[in-house]
Structure formats: structure tokens, C-alpha cells
Length: 115
Length: 109
Image (cartoon, rainbow over all chains, first blue to last red; front, side, top):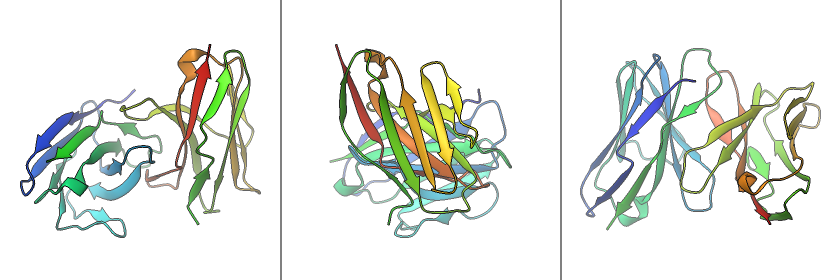
């Protein structure tokens, strides 16, 4: 199946700093990528839909200025958590889809801890 | 009301047992339905797609009832390795997935 690579898998940062997470589709061109976050013992919650070459679409309640998404190419989307705070500590996962494709392939996830 | 609802469990069953998970969804325009499996601290992985005609893959059987907006997953002859969280997932035609809360299964020897 398709491969999606997410990096880093784990990051610890100080409060107030910014963290960038990369999501790459390795063997297909992903016109659309999705970013999710998951709190312990909770389900994945969609944060935003990232479209190549255009602005991301954010879900209700997600601050676009805090979670910056860039999808500059068909194989790479990045999520930057700006001015991170402890409450941003979570498991962030990306998934990728091609046009008309309904099965999602997920990155390995990034466990962010803000101290 | 959540878009996709599942009983979070946990379901604790002995090896060899048959266990069934249920899921309901609120958007009648939903087009695709899936069960994903998620192991602790890992990304979700597709277990199987769900069709109106029902589909079976080994010990796993999935059913979809569009009229009732209801999805089920049946696991027969449970193995220890089946212990995980099972996510009911619904999507439209954009690839955007809506996840249920997940149902935790613990199979005990």
C-alpha cells in the first residue's frame, strides 16, 4: 500500500517555542493531506485539511494562527505548532489521499510534549 | 450528537470468544465506511472496508445498514493479538475521515 512518512516521531520542546512536523507521501502524489490530533484514550480529531497549493481548511475550534499548515508540494505537508504550550501536548497524525481516493494512509504520528 | 458514535468499552473477553462492536453515524450522505485498528501509541491501520452487502475477512465480519445508519464488526475466535482499539470511520468523497471514539478490546488468556 501507499506509504506516508511523518517526522519527527517524538519531540519535547519548551513552552513558547515552535515545532514543525513533516508529513511526506513517499510513493504517490497527495493532493490532499489531513492533520489529526489525539489525546490519551480519545479518538482522532480532524484539525485541518491541507490542499496542495492552496490554504488549509481548518475545523471549527482549531486556531489557524497557532497551527500553521503548509502544503507546498504534492508530497509534503507541514504542521507548525507555534508558541507551544503544555496543553498542546498530544499525538499528531497526518494522513494522505489522492484525488477521489477514499482510503487513508497514515503517518506514524508525532508525540509532542511541551514542558 | 457526535458524527460517529461507538461504545468505548472496554470489552474484556477470553481467548476464543466472539465479540461484536457497534457504531452509528449521523450523516446520511456518508459514502464510505471502515474499521481501523489502533494499537497503543501507534497510528491507525485499516482493518477492513464495510459494504452494504457485508464483507468477511477471515475471523472478521463487517456489516453496514444504511437505513439505520449502523455499522458493525464481529470478531470470531478472539486471539490475544486482537487486543487493540477498534475505530469506526466514516467518510464522504473527499478523503476526510470522521472517527468514532474507538472501542477497546482486551482479550485475556
